[in-house]
Length: 123
Image (cartoon, rainbow, N blue to C red; front, side, top):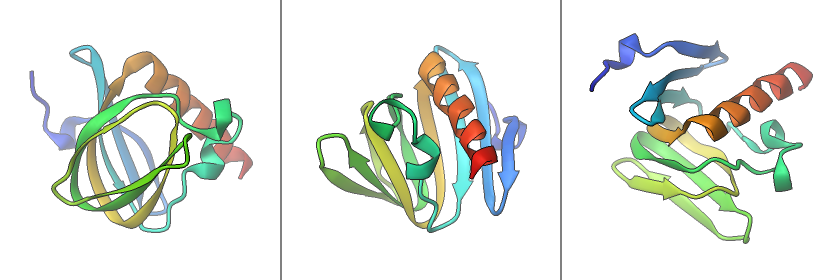
């Protein structure tokens, strides 16, 4: 199974952020995202358990950098060329304009994205 990024449906295109998401890419949701530096996911996750994302993610950073902060207080910087696994219980801030491919569990990813969209309307 394969899909070209141009064929992944755009779910958001706003203020330099382009999120593409394909559910049921096998057993996962596949996303290709372009997100500008300075984007802080904290306010968008407010209201979820511990105000953090409860979805597990796997993927790679094609370009840029993103700082992940975990429930336990640990942080890590994921940069260009890194493969990653991010367990549930995190938030993130984009440190450098980001191009990223992420694979996530379908149910949890849908819950988080639906919450984020509602938060964006409030902010």
